[in-house]
Length: 222
Image 1 (cartoon, rainbow, N blue to C red):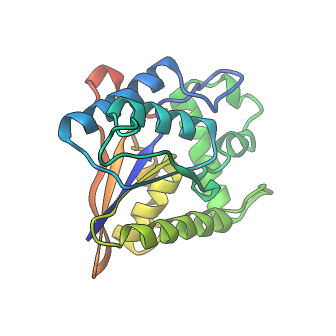
Image 2: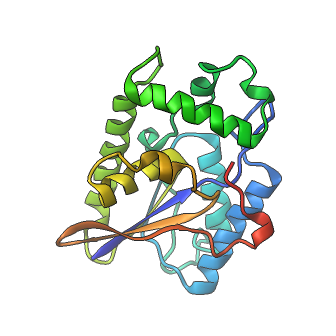
């Protein structure tokens, strides 16, 4: 039996000119995750990440903090492979279909607007660069590829990604469809980890959205 660990990136730079980079708190969240891995004696054999900057920064920061990336680490991680199928959907583009002032909204207002846009996106209403079906299919393709690695006995595979892909995977596993995607997507915490067991009966969710490495003051959703 192997395991697959889906990590949401640390807090990105919401409300700035460049969302796709970690905030100061985002770096601290990623470091806290790595420190928790070190304290718990975590071992990982493989790592993947989406191609977004916030994925790379989370991967590098958490692996460095865990000590797993050090040359003398046994076992250790020499790095990670990039798979852009783990990238997030274009949430800024989706929100912009609802209002021209999306960049001026606070986090709660933005989420409300985004959820309206996601409903249109799922229903096929509107013109989007990537359709919802395309997003779903690429994420599940990335998941199947990661499962092929994780199903080998003793493999512990890390994936650094975003909330949308994690919500899609978990919805498919627990509901057998994407019906829970929206509800799961709304509650994913920055730098949280979701663990999936991969055995003879297929992948099963063991833990979802674990953020026990964070103090209450550092818990963020956006």
